[in-house]
Length: 423
Image (cartoon, rainbow, N blue to C red; front, top):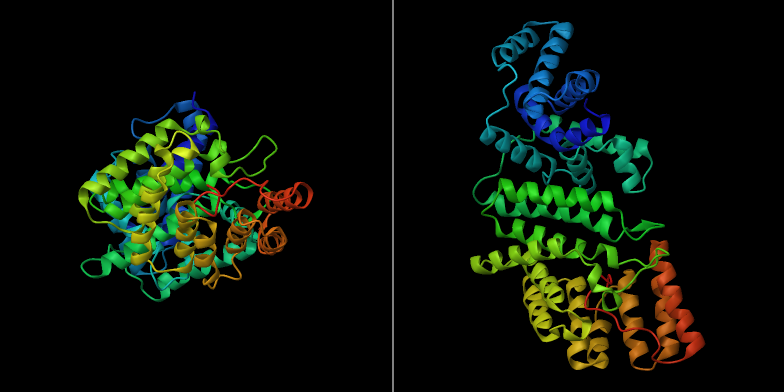
């Protein structure tokens, strides 16, 4: 007997691969999705009694192709559709799975199609989760806290743009590839960040999005093993996610890196992330994700917060800032600078940044002001941070900082970590 939950797991694992193959065969994202959905509906009806076929993935792809043939025959109103149905029929391969290399190529093509620069970032994220992750529209809408009809329209418009603009279903080559890969990795990291430090809602973490980002990260590394930035991103996500159990207290409150119980960190994920960092270092082709992963590997090396090699972290942030001179990177570097040279130096580096609408800018300023004994200014900065976050866990944490300062006096709050997210 096959349980429905087992079929659901296969759906999540195989949906993206199946859609990728069917998009190549059918030339239409909508038709591919319909065919794969039909195949999984049939699997739910058959597998609980008949058991799993030898190759579930091959069964799904073959059945989806057959459902597409049936659909085309029913809807055929001209020679084109009949010819396409005949072509599909001639391409049937029984229950054998597609060749591995072909499937991998199809997945890569679908990833780059979802993340084409002609689409907005919001559309890229929605399509990636829908087509590669197998998430339903309602799940994606819930994860990003938008109404389901809004997310549905976003997905429909994105697929329409791909169709109408004739966006090619291919892996970019030559000079195109680095920039396009950067977009792909950015989409995966955006999904991870929304799961790891939710932009709004009651909880700090959305584990489902973290898991999905890690799955996509592994997929990209498997498909592009020679791309060091892909490995760097996977390493970064593994090292951050390894701390998940320690990041919240029993009441759901946020716990900063400096206060976390490091015995709760996932040692297997930490070891895997550190191994990937070492592999990246051997390649000697540094990139932003690799540097961020290296920074977090240094944190993971420290058994206690006092063992942290802040000078190495500061040097790594210097390299990252040279590569990506953004205010957010400069903010992170400023916190590391405060650990090495003191809070006055850190505050001076923070105050020149134009990040007034970014809640972490105010949270970092507040902590540095507190450490300098400027409690009134620190309270005002904590209040400014509270006003700029929609996440209840973060607001509650900041309120606790204010209460500590206003009831117990200077120097009571714990020091910050290098990461303004408190990871």
